[in-house]
Image (cartoon, rainbow, N blue to C red):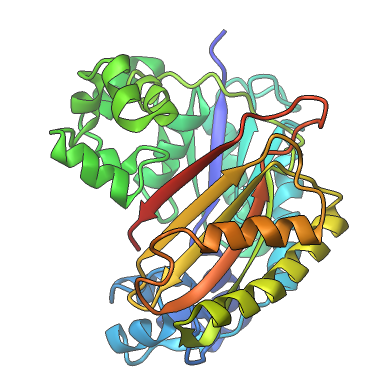
Length: 358
């Protein structure tokens, strides 16, 4: 039996909640975030997006692109409460709900509580109930696996509904730009373009061995996606995969001493969060964002879980001592702990370096 998977993605969630709660903002270009010198856009309304304003953009750039931009502060307690209300609607149909973030989730409705045969009928009902009860719009994608459901939900935003049947998958994916494939970011897309891979059909024409050679483990994933394959299950209880924190500085830092001082503060906060979540990991990842908004990440994996603050700080200092950290002024540092395993099963140590474009 083919699975019936729905991906629901709220449209401009934070900004839409603000516009709903403050009618004066309806129709206005809205950005949610901190309106300071180092503020970053957490979410942008569709009115703001028409001016090129995007999430993770510096607020100063967003205001240059859209001088009439209305900036409102984040209210995460409110967003979490609304997300909980949306989740209650999902559970009217299935308990196989996998939240990805506050504003999106996967649902497996193969066997559902009302006994509705068509997944698209459930998706329509969910969208209707979200609007009637919460006055918010959502987009939904329906397909037989998570990857295609996610692609479908992005296809007709905002307030969209798209279904990809098994017989349609090859045709749908053939013309899809590689940038729309899950896991393909700007740097990977650029590399694919250099290899002559621009669409799903180009990707499908590549052998698994070639993609693995060029993109490592992710190559196998891209190969499966290009063939419409994604065996991942909807996980009702998602295991926490990482804990992290980061800091954006009021002024760019340029010296090793400044980086080390900031690193101590970030490690202290990370240790606090790890303790609160009772989380241990083998992999520590350093994120560095430069003054020009380019960024790099450096990761180290230890054979055993990295135990405490002193050990985390020691590993973090190793990461910041690697080449390239001080090649430009630094505006942000972040640390993330991941790769949680039982200590009886040591991981193989390795170091990874990635370069990303923002």
